[in-house]
Amino acid sequence: MNEANDRAASAGGDGEASLVLETSLALDGESRTAQARRLAVGFLTRAGEDHGIALSAVTVENAQLIVSELVTNARKYAPGPALLRLRITLDVLRVELWDSNPLPPTVRAPDPGRVGQHGLEIVAALARTVTVERTPLGKRVVADIALHAAGP
Image 1: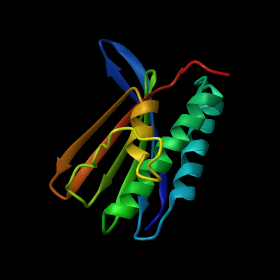
Image 2: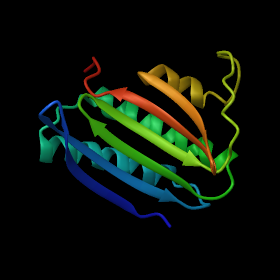
Image 3: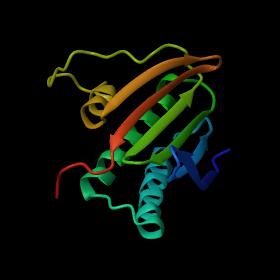
Image 4: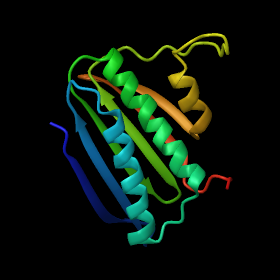
């Protein structure tokens, strides 16, 4: 299964309505990294065109890279299906990836001489926050990205 679903809703808080946009992609046992990156770009493009959310090119590039790293790691280290969800609320893009491996990813010390295994370093460098939590069926990795990152 690898179907994407888009959704927009209004959420109320303190009397104010705020737009919540989200999309998701179920990932099967095959690598779907390119598909996940396209999903992120399409979702962010629609957020801008349909909802007037201004996004810098840097934000879109960072989102693509974070999605790519999280999906690649899930495909490499977790057997079975995974789920990617992108959600925009206020000024944050939340990238969530659920997979079937309950072990948290290992954060290695930065080492420019090391080949590979830099994925979580990259995600942590680009995201506002990164959290990992165990779930009954594995884990969830969450990366929050500021929508209005400085850059060209």
